Image (tube, rainbow, N blue to C red):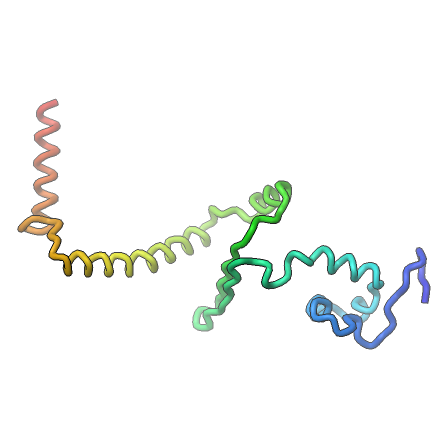
Length: 154
């Protein structure tokens, strides 16, 4: 059936026609709207989303944390966005947000604790004593005394 502008409409029970991408695209859309797309429009939509298919990233890690009702996504791959798109993303999705800073701090602590424990274990195994007898308090007191001497000499 032809409509205005000579475009052909879809008239079948399943507007996605068994296409997994289109099934996902139409999932939350009203059936009336889903049936209104032409073949040409659907082809252009698929072209626009072609680079966003899963598996297009070298690292594609996605998981949920049910107890916190949160999810985590880590994607890494070759940069394919244009300069204009990168600038737009930087403007509307800034890295320096409170949530991002909190996430970076959590990741830093999660990574630092095992590194410290392993480092301390290796140091102990090798018998390396980084602080002379007296412990950290003695080391801080020696450092304070040295600073006082330097300041007096000035």
